[in-house]
Image (tube, rainbow, N blue to C red):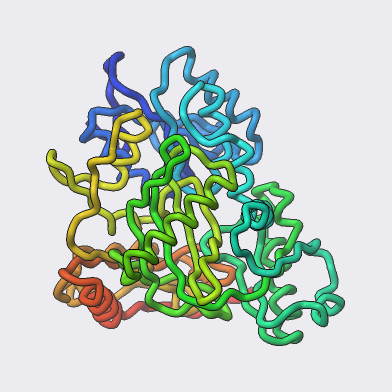
Length: 432
């Protein structure tokens, strides 16, 4: 059976068990619960939440603190009470380090903790990739307390300022002139002082990374590391140019329009980057930019694609169809998943961008948007009366649109047409 939060509840002693580390707001939790029920696997849930609440979500989750890594691992091990766990999976960026430490503590396959730490820090990632001989942009870390006016004259333009440890393009801004650089630096510094950032208690938020802007097309790679060997599950094209001043991602489409040799080169670059970081086992989500100078790996994160985007991926075997979450659970259990191949049809997802700051009141046109040929599903995740904050300060989307069709071009057209039919109602936010 499956509970109201999507967590498989199975009471048999011989049932396989997976420890899932995630934030309480992760969209993928229910998808993992559904996959676990299908496989007859029990999920044990560990999350960063108040341990003084009496199981508010009725999921028997282990309460941990992402910023207290050693203590959290000890809490998880103690909660196991000597019972065996067959695998560990993390959802989202913040739990990846504790997942690595927990895997090591339990003697399970996973990533070395140092590798997980390096993947979470953009500066450490840049340094590791440079040591491995991979192309990297010019970069310079500076304390967030620095006066940007004193830096502006020495920065190569166009440049990008970014935080070291925020995800989803949050806080990433392009500057083409000294004046734009000063404004972007000060804006990022303000964001890094925001309560929801400071509560993470991460010293990485005290540093700002300055990089030269990398031109070119951007791609996302979903893969699976098996004892150091990367298997690419999908390469997503990002058809919208991501040239700034902010870098909000919208559309992912697979299969990629890149020629086969280019796809192989992208996969090889990601595999080399994963090795350079020390990543070894489990899912990876990577971002790259490709131009005439080569393949620039932007990041390799030891976790699956975020949000509801995993619903754009389906896999097939002789036994039938499987979700990404099912493939990841099987891999965490030590099963051979080499027989799973992405479906033959093209597929894609649009992460619906926030059009403006304000209070979300609702959306019209969902039914007519669903009628667009090729549209699979539309999920509006914004809640009525929720405050909407666009990038670079924001960290969420209005929802997701999914499409499947014979070609990637048809998927692209369907996503854009469905989005054009939606009308979001956003009231002006009250300013005190």
